[in-house]
Length: 44
Image (cartoon, rainbow, N blue to C red; front, side, top):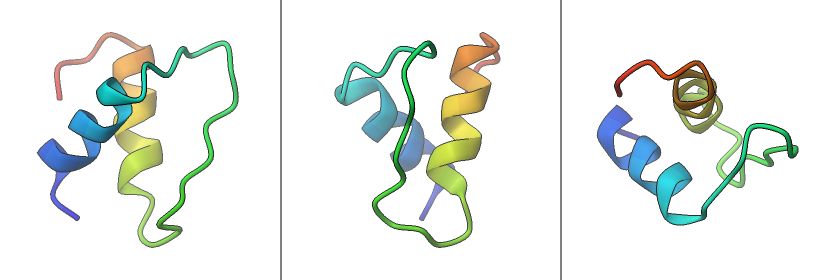
């Protein structure tokens, strides 16, 4: 999955870094990596 798509999915679901994040794709971890970057306020 492309990084920009993963970041968009995290933002669309209104995830907050204080809550657990479950990656439904369970592939290379792109969604989790993008969520971590969003939590650290690093631009995707």
